[in-house]
Image 1 (cartoon, rainbow, N blue to C red):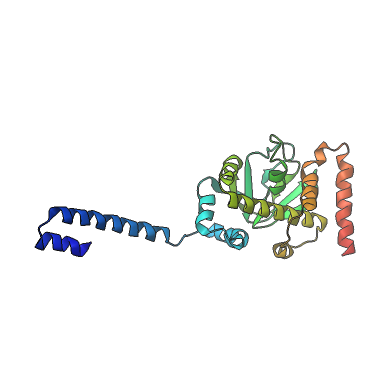
Image 2 (cartoon, rainbow, N blue to C red):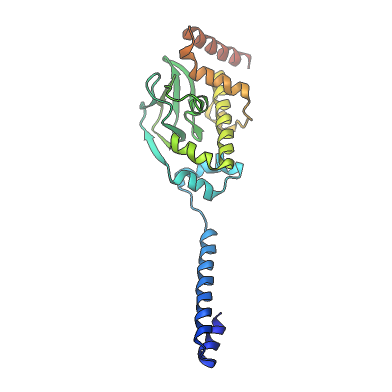
Length: 244
């Protein structure tokens, strides 16, 4: 295009040819800029890089897609030590879904310790899964920060809408949430499980384990004798620990 412009201007004095090639040159230059912009390196926030590397990158989620997921309708929030993320029978489960970025969180039911939540884990995955079809419910457990914590928080309504528009990412979330529920169930059955052991777990979630966790954390309050249910769960965890 450049040579045609020079030729049309200096040798032929042809205005039409010159203008036509100038337009082509501008269009090609803009297209080049667009291609360079698309191939630019994506910079993920330093606080989110660990979550991406551990949870999303192994499932082949591109950095650009992860940035879209975390850049528009989620926030990074904090909890001070002793501050509650959710209180049983008080906090609604419909508002949010969160991943713990830093710190440690304790989950309890009526003062009985159930399990801990560590970094790069969902905080409220059982509630998110079990109430997909039943809204308006309350947390049946209390979730309190054991340390100063930082977590990534999505608006549940906007996240659900976004996932409905992206089939691949929706399947990724279904897998991650199911796996997280399985890990929490394993932690419940083994109260002595350490942070390192939790981080090493990489199990495919089963329907049975997901239902068990959801029943434990969301259906005890609707049972006629919740104290007996809790005692059975705690005895089961102790028996499993002793067998090991």
